[in-house]
Structures are given as structure tokens and as C-alpha cells.
Image (cartoon, rainbow, N blue to C red; front, side, top):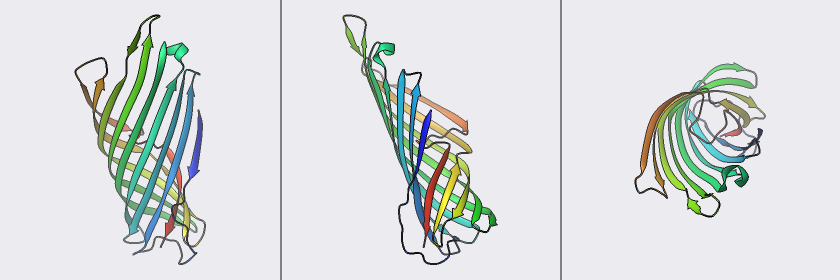
Length: 217
């Protein structure tokens, strides 16, 4: 698997007051994540996601923020292995209100943990045409999935200047409930599924570790 993580700077300004997320300060930033994956040359997955983030520091240790994510996943399949044309596309919107606690500071390095609630809504569509020699059958479908849950994400920040910091966060723990409705082109009845997941897997289009920039003002 080949993964490319691109840092994203939403706002760049003149260097001003010391970047420390002091009481009464705001920050804005975010990250872009691009992932490609070839599965035994039979399927190629390409994932794009962007998550702007902003927050406010109530003290030197406590802050609150909101992340809003937009993602797109696309999978294409080799027709030699799947007996016909097949591709799948999923678009995702997510929101993450969170509280941040900074528990360690050493010079330009800070360690923190984000914890909060998450919501994600994904719409997916699959185009599939199955060929059995002479006949071609439409096996496509489209679905909608809603996800609700909580998360904990530890992180680290490195201050590059007075107002700019490089940040890294890990999707350490997620617990969420999801409900999905799928409509198949070859069936009249819709199929509903729901479940509960707990672990390091994320319902967003973000990888397990993301890198970004923050600007404080």
C-alpha cells in the first residue's frame, strides 16, 4: 500500500504573538489525506479527504474545537477478475466536536488528547454489470449510512514559529453505532443493516494517523 499524507495550511499570516494556545486564543488549521491502495492488481482504491478544524483555548491546558470532514473513496476493479465492469464511489461528510487537554509541555513540543463526539454521513454508489457470456446483468446498488459515536485521539504539536504549529494525531479509540440502507438495482426491497464498532478503526475517510498545520490568533 502506498500512502501519501499531505499537510494543509488553511491560514497563513504575519508572525505575531507566541503560539501557545493561551487562554482566550483561537486556532484554525486542518489536514488533507490522500491514500492509494492496489489489492493484488485486482482492485485499486483511491481515497481523498479534507478536514478543516478550528478551536478556542479556555486555559493553557483546556480547549474545545470542531472538525468538519469531507471525503471521497473510489474503487475500480479489473474486469478480468470480476466478469464485467465494476466501480464504487463513496462521498462522506463528518463532524467532530471535541475537547482538548494538553498534559505535557516541553519547549516547542506539546502532547495533548482530543475526546468528543462524532457524526458521519456517507452516500455510496456501485456500478456493476455482470457478464456471463451473452447476457449482461445490472448488479449495481446505492446506499446511505449514518454513524454516531465517541472518540479519543492523542496528538503532538511542534511549534514552528510564533503562530504556526505542525500537528499530528492518531485515531486511537472509536466507539460508534451505524445504520445503513442499501437499494439494489436488481431487487425491489431495500436492505437495512446496523451495528456497533469499537476499536482503532475510523468511520471517516481519514487514515489512522494524520498530519496538519494550525495557526493561532
